[in-house]
Amino acid sequence: MKKTIILFLTIVFFGVNIAFADGDKEIKIKTSAICEMCKARIERNLGLSKGVKESNLNLKDKVVTVKYNPGKTSPEAIKATIIGTGYDADEQVANQKAHDKLPSCCRKTAAAH
Image (spheres, one colour):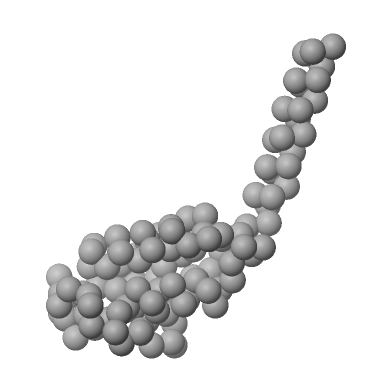
């Protein structure tokens, strides 16, 4: 009987996790990132955001791919995090104060390095 209950709870637990995992969405956002420091900064801040499961910034095309739970966050909130970090997010311009706090090598006017 004990084994049956444990088996039942295990099946329910994994079933619930799979059901919620299927609800994740993905968004791609163009940024103004330049280097590995930019990549680390954006990915770290997105990772600290509620509902963000995973983020990966491709520096070649400057696009960050974000997997998120739409029940906990939205594309607008994700873009707001990027903007608040000091980088452009699609057509939205970076927060100027946050941009000014970036290292000089990470600002939009810096050359790729």
